[in-house]
Image (cartoon, rainbow, N blue to C red; front, side, top):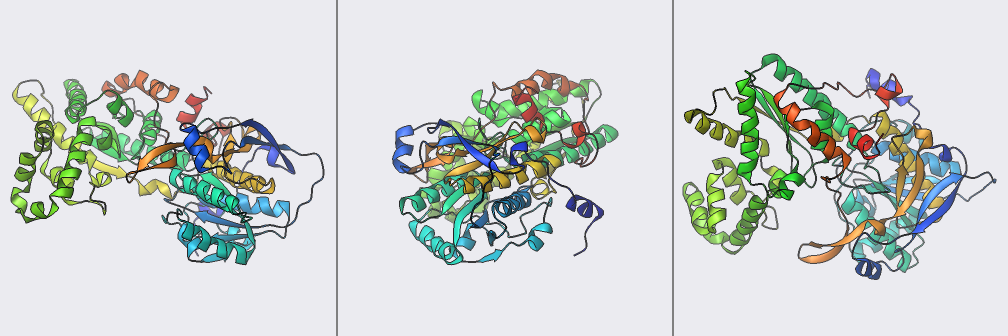
Length: 548
C-alpha cells in the first residue's frame, strides 16, 4: 500500500498520555453514583451495574503481576477520527498487563459479534493503523445489540475465544446497548466484562466526567479549515453568500465550535431557535436582515453556518412534520392515488390552518420531500432536507419582496455546501490521537481492575497530557428514560448546546460584530508539528468550558 509523506511521518508519532498511565496503576474509588434522572426506573433495570463509584487511576508503586487476558473490541456506528488509536491504546494496555494477552476485533461492528466474524489484532496489524483516520482496521456497523438472543449468540464466540472482556467504541446509543449487555452478562454470571468508549463527531456525548467525545476535535478542525477557505474565497470574489450545512442532527456543537474558530457572518444554533420558539420565517428574516445591512455597506457576500438538524428544532416545523406523519400514515393509499402535480394542493387542504399555511410557504422541492421520502417507519427523513437550500431560497424571496418595497438595494447570489463525511475519517489531530490512545489504555486498566458497565474517561484535557486524569464512570450515571418507538427505554442523555454556558455566551457576545464586519479567521489545515499552543490546542468549546 502506497503511503503519503504525512502518513509515514504520523506513523512515528508517540501519543502523549496521563502520567498515571506510565507504569503500573491502581484504581481509586470515588463517590458512588446515581443516574442523571429517573433514578428508580434505571436502578430497577440495572440492579447489577447501578450506583457504582467513579474510578480514578493513580500510579501504583507496588509491584504487580496479572494473568493474560483475551479482550474483544467493536467499532459501532458512524466513523470518528481516532478510533484506531483507541484500539492501539487498548492493545498496548493489555500487553502491559501481561504480554501473553490477546486482542480480537469483531468485523463490521456489533454484527460481527453476533455473526462470529472476527480477526486477531496482532502488533503487525495494529502498527499499520496507529494515528490514522477511519475505522477500516476492522470496520464498523450499526447493528443494535439489544436482544437476549443476540447477547447469547455473542457469548458463544466470546466463550470459544476465551474472551473475558469486551470493549465497545461508540456513541450514546452504542454505549447504552453496551451497558444493557454488561448488565445481562453480570446477571447470568457470564464472566465477561463490558467497557465503553465515548465516540461521536457530533459532540453530544459528554458530561461532567466525559469532557468530550473523541473525533469532535478533528472533525471541527477539518470543517473549520474548509470554512476558512470558503471565507477567504468569499472575501476575494465579494459576490456570493455561502450557506454551509454542518453535521449535527441532535445538537449544534459542531456549528458552534466552527463559528468560534472561523467567525462567520451568521451561525444558527438549533437549541436557541427552539428556546426562543422561532419560526422558519423568523430565521429567514434574521438572515435576510444581515444580508441587507451588509449590502448597505457594499458587502454583497457572506457566510452562514447551519446545523444539520435545524428543522427539527423549529417548533412550528416540528408540529407540521408530526401532523404530516400522522395524516400520511392513515391516508397513505389515498395520497398515492393523487396526481403528483396535485399532491401539494391536496396536502394543503388536509392540514390544520397553521400547518397548512406553513406547508404552503415552503419551496416546492422541500414540500415534496416532506411527503414523499419517508423512512421504513413512515416518518419524514428530516436529515435529507437540504436546509441550506431551503433557507437561501426563502431568504432570496424575502429580499426580492424587500427590494420592491425599497428596503433592500443589494445583489443576492447563493452557493451551497454540506460538510459531513469529509470530517469523519480524517487523520486525527494531536489532541484526538492522544485522547483516543489514552481512552483505549484506560479501558485496559478498567478491565484489569475488574470493572464492567463503565465508560472510559479521560479528563482535564485542556492541560498538558501528563496532567490528564484517567478513570471510568458507570454508564448508568448518564442515563434517563426516553420514549423510543412508543416505549419508554433507558438511554444515555444527549448533551445539547447549553445557552447559559461559556461557549454559547462567547459566541453570542461577538456574533453581531461578526455579522456586519468581515472578521473571518482562516485556521488552515490541522497542525501536527510546531509549538504546543498550535499543534496540541483543544477545541475552543473545551477551553471556554474549563475557562482556560
